[in-house]
Length: 243
Image (tube, rainbow, N blue to C red):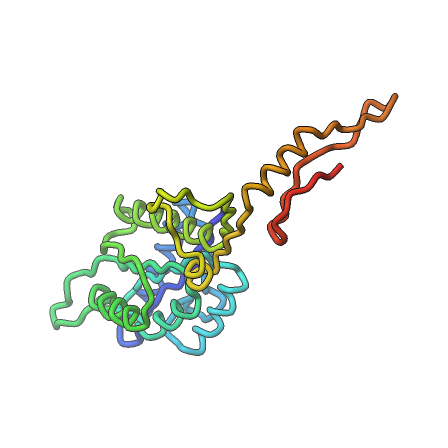
């Protein structure tokens, strides 16, 4: 199953924009080396960076149209935390926070990026928006921890994508003694929109017996015949024979 990541690098206006643009490209190139399929925001503004509320609305529209399965928010400098949180809240997909290691401050005390503090700020706002996220340790893009963290995140997105598309076939009720297999069917559909489709055991038994007793007709001379199968409709649970 293909997993597509929304790549939305972010910056803040009081820090170096050229350096943030440089890191946006460095990170994107590394993602391509790792064979990560992603959708960027290079066409949203000249910098290809997330920092403006108006741009955020266009990014939401683009990412939804592209069907992204996760959101990667690399902080190319401090980042714009409230815009990141609003984007993550709207998309409702797994979120990954990360930023490159900061260099030492300049002699006059100024900082080029201050990425670490920005990640703290964005994480706090995400929690206030009740958006779960994964934090990946600050590192260089060529460090092993970066590759491992990105691949783990893609795997998480794959699990969530599959989970949200699931429909569960339940064959018969649980045995009385098996308290460990109890579940809340109502909560599954209310919280996760996962539908349970029950099939009573007598109905299944009748269908299997009918299939076992069925003899397919074979057309004389042609060497071909009709195909028999046991059909189960998820929209209307029932078992029946088709030829």
